[in-house]
Image 1: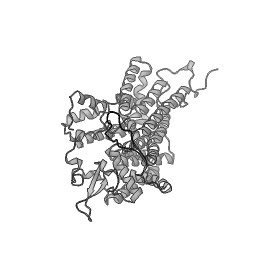
Image 2: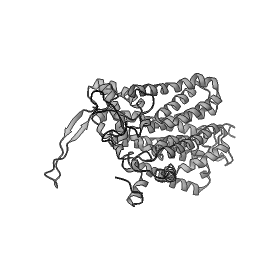
Image 3: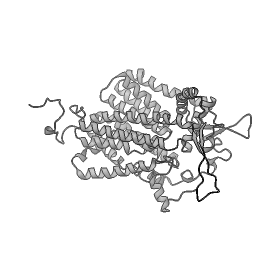
Image 4: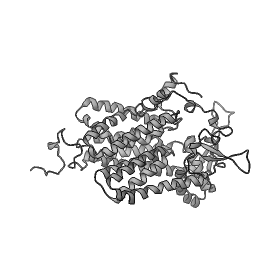
Length: 483
């Protein structure tokens, strides 16, 4: 018996290479794809969960700055972080004049307060029920002196209460969204990866395990939140350009496009382009649903910014002023990456191809670049998204090339550019389709995947450290840093 025209192909009736890439006859997910989705999701979620539970919660100046705001809100009901026990461990703070004591300024985190405020709202009920302060020491255990140093008294081991408050937040904020976006991305691949299994499986694996933002899932930061928001936005926009006209899809696109900008301010360019795309699809529903949904996180961002500092502009807009250059400030004489002032051509090279590069550290990225070209030719339904991807990438890379000089400090990769990766993930399956018939291309991808995953593995222990390429160059005395 011949199969029905709309039924999925069987092994004996495999489609030819000429089969259309976006073909409604292949929406049904095969058993092999289901297995791969389960394996990849389990590895990604399990690996990030294990690393999150293993490494210290207060790991670097960047995340400590946010934890200090959360502590101050929960314990004192203020954004002022002077009394936080971890405040001295972060240079990511600004100073304001203290009217009661001009010699001792008031300190505030330099990070946007919206995310810490939301987290404080989550933690506060549990703190009230438990009655245990966030900075309490639950138990202090004496260390046994080392045999080769009998006269040295080691510091005791302190079991901190903040771990029990903060670790669940990291799981809720980073790891649960990872699982959600992988499921959503798999649905996108069902529609756009074609009937062959290779591009579907390779794109899912690379997007789940080979992107540099993966190592930041273990720590509190704005970048992974921005990545997840952009991913949801892009996948919602893909549904809209494909013909979905549900109100909830417009609302999701609007809310997460705006929330992405609240966490990564340059992502406001994506918010604007998402507005233009949805206006072109259905102006009425855009104005009635997309815009109100987008205004919710924007209003919350401005409100918390004003409550924290009495102003609507972000604190880091004051970088280089007295707000940062207070007495004994780290920024009086920065070190390592923060002390760099390279010529712009060299900086641009390392930001894209070199030791912090999107391509240098993540060599699966060129497959997405190739995929953009093929998708533009063969997936015309995605052209609005493809145009937005290219425009946003050029603008954001150009902006950070001109306006910054330290790659984001001691960090695993150019963290300011992480939120661009979900945009390029929609191109990735198109860049891998030729590998179905070319063994050499599959081999090249596997090599690129190994290097990309190695970059992630090298970073898991501490995302607030140098990438392997910087360490290699410095150890070879080819890239000395000021210590």
